[in-house]
Image (cartoon, rainbow, N blue to C red; front, side, top):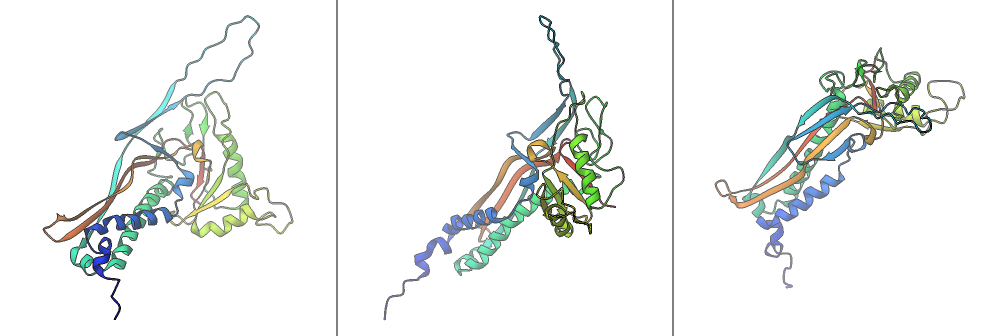
Length: 309
């Protein structure tokens, strides 16, 4: 009879405390596979302190003509609203009995670690989408107003920045057309300079995804029996998220480099594990994941939204 090759003793990495690097690989690979909506619409920055501060600054006035030999006029920028955000720590642990390890319950353990990785990414996604979910109420910008508000102004208060319609409307060809028109001219500086921020994405809950695709990708005008060309065709990218809780809400969002949505990462997702020497009281192997970050909105620029009719 041939010698048996697949003995438990030959696979110590799978059945003892040495399995922890294997679990780490499972966690990391599942983390990388999880899709992220927030990374497409939020500007993500790294930071090395427990707080992050944002200060709004007035823009410069328009250039003026200068006669030969005349002096330049020199301006100084003035500070507007500011906002301080505090880092929050998120984490979750998983306890593995040594008996489960000894008895080779590797598939069960691998599945649990994969779910821990998914939970980490889902937590990040939900926190980001909650800025949009609460954008008409508790999610505020540096001026203290809700993210979507018709009363935002430039730092001096001279120019209004209304990044939501006066009357909330459902998504349609007409409402999207009006929103795009407003988006292109509402974001201005104190001197009246147009910031020329362009909409790049139409963000919707999953209930509106198919209709949004029809609006922006059809070659002919949607919601019409005429054969007009669709002016939105291939101009906007549709992004949907199941984490958006209002089935009627929709937003136009610029490139993350131009909008006021922020994720400030203090410490990315990391894991720690301890073997039986750590859990000697209850014979457990301990595994945990954590991260530290801030999620918020600092200004209304680059995002225009409606909560639906």
